[in-house]
Length: 319
Figure (tube, helix red, strand yellow):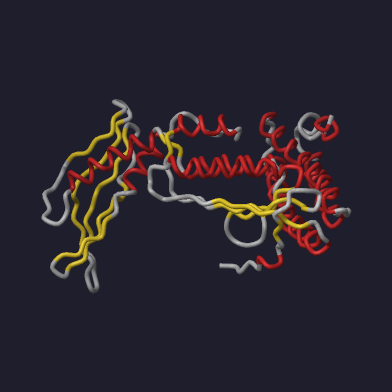
């Protein structure tokens, strides 16, 4: 894991013009939270909610059966119990529960049960249970059925990450160097960080997997050293964003894409990125000219889009 020298990111306890913004870091783990409870939390704390009312049945089925993993040691023999795929059909998802006996040179396998979701009857089920002294296949299948219902009505880590990333974009944060969820939130948005911390703590308490989340933040001093540091972090983070936008714009051109909704969304993202650059120039007290060529090429790609009259009329979107 990349080492982060926190001594170079000086913290401050004072919320004033003497600070550049906040350093925010948080963790996400496997979590399931009732979707209605998640939506209510978002509304109460004023965090934008993302996600539908139900997870797709295919995702819920795969998640629930994928959690059936056990390692059993008995009489000197090691067994691995898990689910593996069957061939898909048009009317059902199906996996089989197997027991793998770990051998010196070759492993042997025995089938314990079938688990399936019947699309026609909209029902989770299991059959072909095999008695085994070491494994209670019926109990494992019943556990999978319960987990299926839980997944179907819960927000998972993927949805939580979408909500968090939406918040990060809304406060014009930049991703800091290193692994994990590490961000710099500029001064004009740092008042929103407290609400985000409250949200993560509340989600952690509402989680049904027993895996806690963590979140914390501290102020960054407004001095030459930190302005230089945040300038480099800005360049690093925004270069990655520009590369992603360039890739998407090139894809739209190559595929002759003419979807107004998709092109409009990416056009607005490009304009927002330019606005973000101007805001950071004010905060860091310098012109961020090192990315001028990248922004120019991004605008050229946009204007070469087959939908240039609408989606990539940048001046129109700024107005």
